[in-house]
Length: 259
Image 1 (tube, rainbow, N blue to C red):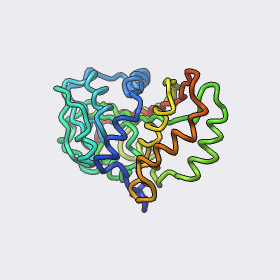
Image 2 (tube, one colour):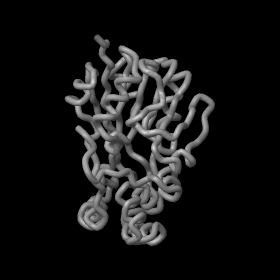
Image 3 (cartoon, rainbow, N blue to C red):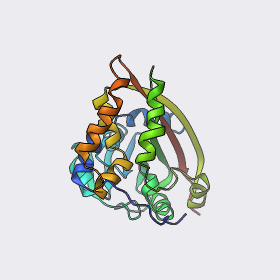
Image 4 (cartoon, rainbow, N blue to C red):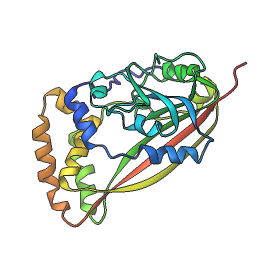
């Protein structure tokens, strides 16, 4: 479970952060509601949101905690985050969380665990959570479907994704690693939600993803050119109130008592 060679988070730039903030749907509170159906959560005195990105996950956690420490390795992502009186944003990595031992009642990781050095992140999450504290790991994923438009899926899987493949990443959640780190009562659940999308919305969303960030960073295509390409190639799929179909998966675990 050590860091896999070649895994690198591609969102460490202001343009990538702005695209992320503008293109991602807000599903984070719904994910936490799923987590609350799995474990008894909150109200927490201190929650730590790890890999908070542009702060959508931290805002959701603020509903459940008096104080939130929200960290991300990318200063650019944090510059795009929305301030909140209960949230303290810090530039820090999951492998070295700026919180004392056994001080957090709740730790959350939203759409970020796959970028971490897995072994180091597990050790840190186990360190900062008090005995009985809850860990919530979650992520959304695009099913690649538009309601009423099966040809969109053909375009996405047959043309767009082969042209712009996703970067290498780790797994989202490993139950064996959780147990080895001192977590128990592992549970998971999955749900689905739909978001009204136009061709412009779809372009914004696809440009917020890691494959787009990586190809833009490489210089192979500009963000403007990629956006025009997506809009031009998908325009025929929109115009009748289409909705993009997303899934969200949530894993929870409880910090077991230390010997």
